[in-house]
Length: 276
Image 1 (cartoon, rainbow, N blue to C red):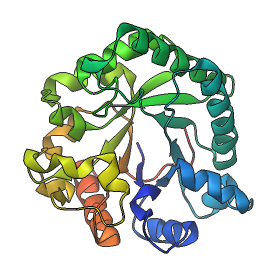
Image 2 (cartoon, one colour):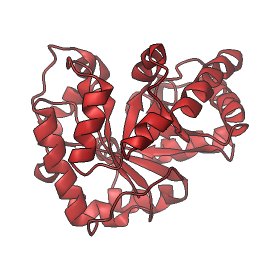
Image 3 (cartoon, rainbow, N blue to C red):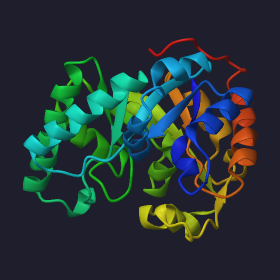
């Protein structure tokens, strides 16, 4: 089990990966989760990669990006690019959404096309020992526990797994205590974030998150929100990697606070020296 920060936290900051990694080590993180656009743009600096990061004492636990195509050929092209990125950074997992249509609004044909594209991506990644993780996220074919299990079944590939976002399952109205055992065999990673109340969940809509002037009202530290992570974390599969997905202000202070909170709930487990 490793605890990482997400570089998407710093999407609007004028700081670089070297500053972020130095701070992560000093504040007891095990690794970083690299946003896809950051990974692509860092190709301009070849010395920055797996070996450089490990010399800092960190792992790149996952590259998080978005495969929005429902075409298998385009999915293979996307996956081939992400194999290159993953191997450069030593990541074993690639995160994507399951399309861009809510499960209730998707036609059977659209589900089949998206599943075929995701399966094609899995095939490319699997050839290099990599996994594709589908995130539980609103507005996608994995927007609830039931929907997530359906799209996993439709993809039907051993190299697909789940990037669990408990907050979004809670947003969907799922009972997390019931959801986690059902998803447990598939969970390979978990994003952690919280909100003060359900009314403010719109603050996590992608358009708002990506906007530099977007609202951050309702984004709160893990221990201060509506999802009871002190009850939830013990229910996660043993050894699952965790990432703090903070989108709000005061990034460094909040990440340090949340890191301490998670460590206190997990017995202070320490960093591992290599990717699994």
